[in-house]
Amino acid sequence: MAEIMRATLDDVKGIHAITQLAFKMYRDEIESDVPLKALTETEEDIACDILSNHVYVAKVGGKVLGSIRIEKLTDDLAYIYRFSVHPDEQNAGIGTELLSHAISECARMGFAAVALHTNAKYFKLARYYYGKQFYVHSTNAERGYIRALFVKELKDKEVDLSKALEK
Image (cartoon, rainbow, N blue to C red; front, side):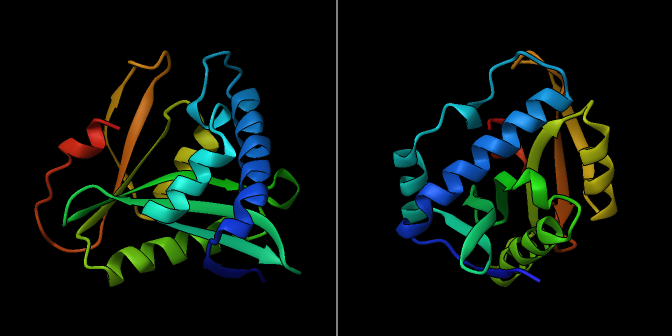
């Protein structure tokens, strides 16, 4: 079982390494040459996220094995991004622990919904998010692939998703 905690600036290098590995694997699995923003981010970008958003890491033995980031888009809507787990640790429950923690934090912070994007043709991830009670709100192809906006409702309340659509 991993220890889930708020990331600190000491975690930047570990987060960067995991993000690069996981998103390269993601790109290879979807057999795409479309550039992914996650693969161009720098350690400075990650440090800024830690200072301005909610970034959580999963650690085992003090080593970062996964991370997830949450951005407040509106008072009612949170956005999950750069969710990644070390490829050698995938399907071991670390991602589920991270996502569950992030969703719990979003509920604790009072958000009515949480949203995220993923490639609509990455069936493994789509099934995963469906299993966590996310639904597909919409898709677009503006980035060169079919990108799905997944939403999980945390409260029985109408939420304006326009800020998530802009991500």
